[in-house]
Length: 178
Image 1 (cartoon, rainbow, N blue to C red):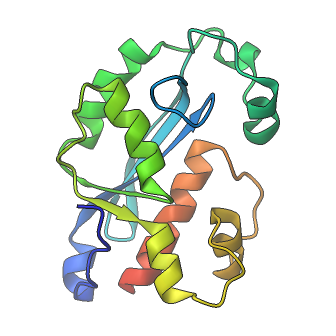
Image 2: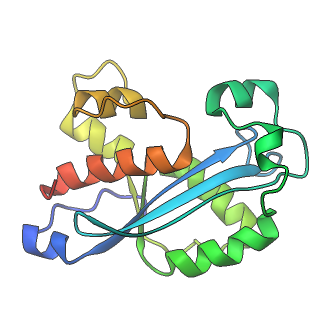
């Protein structure tokens, strides 16, 4: 289902709930690496209505290169809940809503691996695909590049909550409800 949702009428887009979601991990493999942060922000059209955000204590140390990218340290996750505590709450928060993320297949790989497939039936929207469609001339379609192109200048990339907000803005701009 990893298709770009066709543009809706503005009225129906404003009446639709979607969830911008992002994960930070200890590496690239859902089988061999772990979630260390997840954020999900629920929107009704262009209004933020709820959020779920937490660090997650991994079973192994966070590699130095991941700390350099995300800023998340082993000390930060020391007292965080483990994945077994986080995942049921995230599943409940997300429900059957549409999930929006930048390079969503990456996030979905980790979510499905850690939830025994609970996210298999959520419709998904990939803002990378939206960006390629809306801004074909960009040098790349990394989240930071796209965000700056549409006017998001703040620092904070590679932290899950900030990345969720950027994805949501890209999606809303695509729907014409920004």
